[in-house]
Image (cartoon, rainbow, N blue to C red):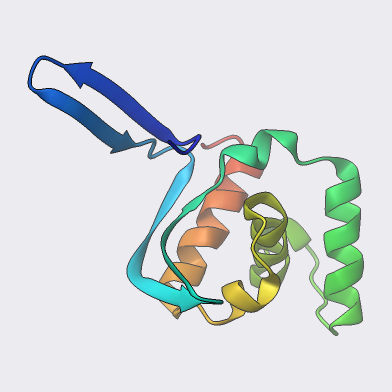
Length: 115
């Protein structure tokens, strides 16, 4: 069982649903390092610290990215996504645009209290 799954045991069997507040369901299943990934667990967002943000800022700057509001910058939010999910940034860079924006929205919504 994953941290973002809600499991209910009923007389008719076991029901597993995804916690929509902490899960990004991708538009497709991605193959990455021998794994199939169709959703991302962002339940770790509560554990992000200022140190994680500083690290993401430094990584983005080293990659040549510059943003006035880094918490709204796509690359910066993908770096945070990598930190939270434990997947490398290379996974996030291969996402189709629609899925990359889903990740960005998850991260920015958390930062701005909308999630």
